[in-house]
Image (tube, rainbow, N blue to C red):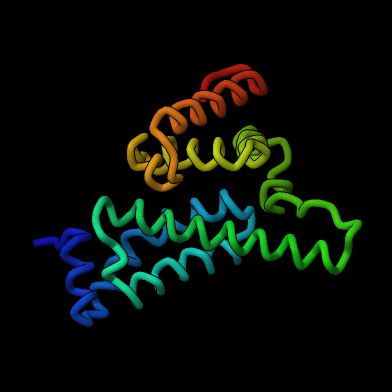
Length: 176
């Protein structure tokens, strides 16, 4: 029998580190993908995902319901956003003339590849639209789950996804 996420969290609360290993293997890729969208940086994305798992390990009782994946994504996203804010403040202090960090270099290397162009364009979308679109289209989360992750309404999620798709269609001439 395969343990559900709720069962794994309960096992973790009783000190079973094997449960944490299973949780990490189930959800790590999704957390890294989402935090990479937020940060545009692989190292920050990995750190934020790891921090979400550490917080669950330290306090499994913090997860009080809903889906574990949505809870972990919320924690990782918040960690990533906080780290981005801190990094921007540090950069501003050290160099007031600094410009916004460039997007993921891997996207630039891809050149004319259409997929890379779409990904690069998605990176330019406002954070709320970008995150909602990736959670919906890539992670397959429901609008309800996304609303919980983003701490907003389902209507706001629907609008963000529609707006992001419209911008992509306008830019590339077809539907994503």
